Image 1 (tube, rainbow, N blue to C red):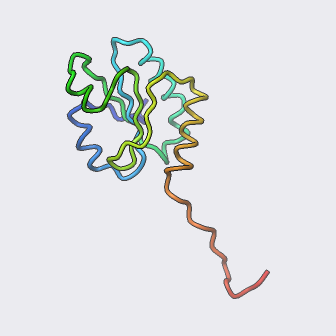
Image 2 (image 1 turned 30 degrees about the vertical axis):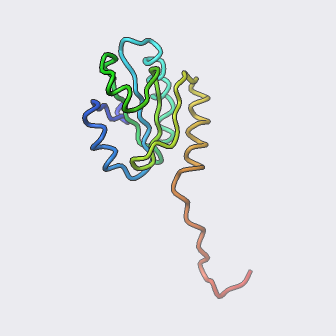
Length: 127
């Protein structure tokens, strides 16, 4: 899972300040079995999107209520998608890998950087 950044909550703020594209943050806990399922699902799907989305995992200390409130985390796992430092999407339910793939495709299509238009080799030449 080398495509993931493993951060603690203190490192997230500086990472968001430097973020210049799409960043998916997986908030989880090793104490919650469904978080492991989500992490494995992300590991299966993430390689398809590495050039479009950066991936980050944070283990949340569940007793730290202020952190849970800061990110409005009601359940774990929770996935937050950021564009720059702005939260743009939130998933707070367990998704199968195929559902995650569709979510990422839609997110990249909607929020991703626009692709440049194809260039004509000879603009003076008509077809």
